Image 1 (cartoon, rainbow, N blue to C red):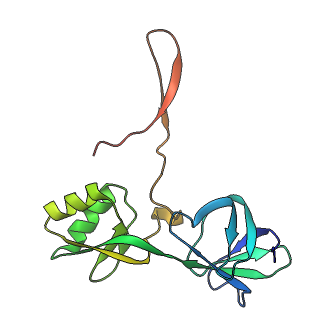
Image 2: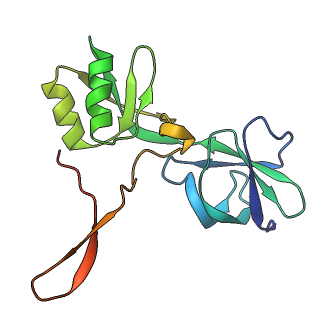
Length: 170
């Protein structure tokens, strides 16, 4: 059965009763328009007004009012433990890397460069597979990666000008 389009997202706690579930990774939970398949095998089109960060427990509302619950899918992650988690979290955040912060561990997406840095800092790093629910960005904006700092306009000697995005030195 093909389901109708979903034009609305209901946040966790703002809805009840769903007709199905869809499991999405962290990257897949950042979308505007995409064809999805429920765990029951039904296809539907998400067509939101703007690109949206979808949370675990949110629901897509279909045209006819039915809802499909979003669940965070298992992903291949790095689990970080160590004596000074706040220091490790600071280094991860300084690289604008999404991070799930818990009392006894941190979780990040697998990245061999960040992993090497963490080992160098004395962390214990292991591979795990589980849902990834990183902290949202400052000021309630959700995602902390792919952010923009604005662009600067400059000109070249040949007379043309164009803008470049702000770059970080890491």
